[in-house]
Length: 236
Image (cartoon, rainbow, N blue to C red; front, side, top):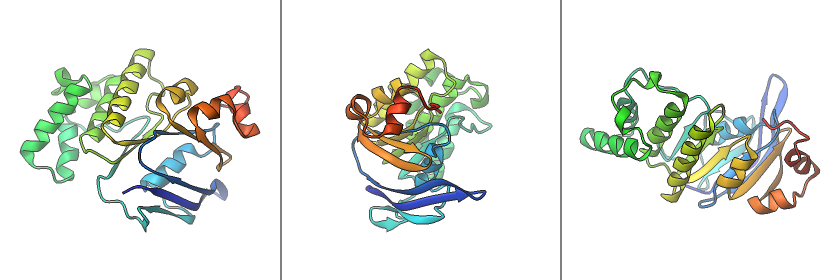
């Protein structure tokens, strides 16, 4: 399905340009972290790539085709995941059924992934009574069970305590190790260093810089990125 190619992508709302002529190609392999200050357009860019929003100008193609992705090739986990009014296990099974997985395989796969994320003991508990960290682990498990080629993560550890953050980061690393491409936003620079291989730095809706993580933090090529790293721009 990859590469994902953005060609002059723009998105405007309320008379304001939120994404401004972004062009880049994202391929398999390296984990891509999108950084930028508040209002840079990080979450909007993720939603455009995922297909939740449509560009007002420009084009997004997958493997050379507009809207070329197949159902369940990709998944997205949000900062505040939506939990269905059913058990943790049933939340995962529901998504697998929609993907056309057989009933027997659904439960086997759902229980396996709950075990991996440390929620096996909570399989029958209503998803909506789980803690914030547990819900985020469940959201990751629900996405992982689909075996997506690309997983979009929008601020996956925002508002979580340090222990929950470590759990989520471990799961993200495990998902990446299975071959799933990770594309994520974060406001946590330490997390970007730990989980990222390359950085896309946005400022005022523009893609200002793209670099390997080590290069970006050691020798940013733009004044905006240097200010951001020093904390002279808002982090979120």
